Length: 305
Image 1 (cartoon, rainbow, N blue to C red):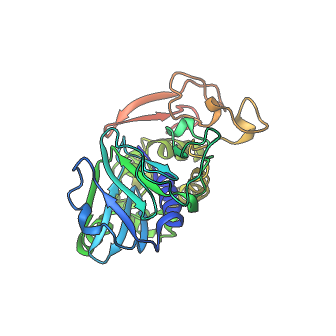
Image 2 (image 1 turned 30 degrees about the horizontal axis):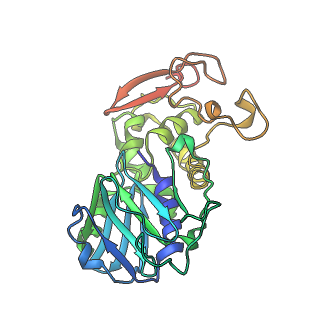
Image 3 (image 1 turned 60 degrees about the horizontal axis):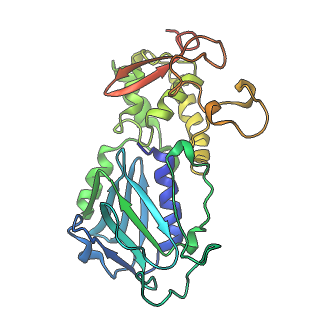
């Protein structure tokens, strides 16, 4: 599931591409019933909060997108492609032309003379590079989200009221610290609770706990506040780095087998999806078990209770 770094990355790119412009909004498959309500309107602002995106066309016209586990955006320059797959919604500049029509005045072409498009790959395969500058993007397509619906202002406010602070928005973390300090719930479950902290998913959860050398099984109330504060502070540069490199690199060069240069794919995490393999630091076999419906990864030596 995309985590906060990826949500903020999309918001940043789409802001540069579309905010302040009138957009054509369509749902060719009929899976977004309110497309006509915002079609032809100017996109005022894009909100990114935790794992939620809000495309604001007016105070009571906010396109809410939650990518869930399988949602993703496709970006393109030039002609709109023929509709393929379960396309939920497409947003495009009004200058973008459909395939087969006269070429867009902003068309970018690849080496074969065809319209340029790019699709971000699965996080572990994507190093954050792209052939498109955000300002050059003519259209975006959304497939596979868990939600794509039109919110009014009151619905958006209710959503925000359910979410904990988002480190990438510069939010005050004290409400989250207070919830954790009162809770008997295990800290690993609390970090995944979006009402406690927004934007932290399974990867950052596992890696932040490891970097803090903290047992995932401690109750929130038993974790020193200084440790919780340290994890919050640690999350900020990691999330920001993940906006550039979607692989989410959390290991330090000194802990990798190859300590110099860009980390190899197997070296980017300490424990996430490394179960059964030796810990980079102590050599103990990394463990995995289910917690709150997701796989939890940890090193029993470095993160002993």
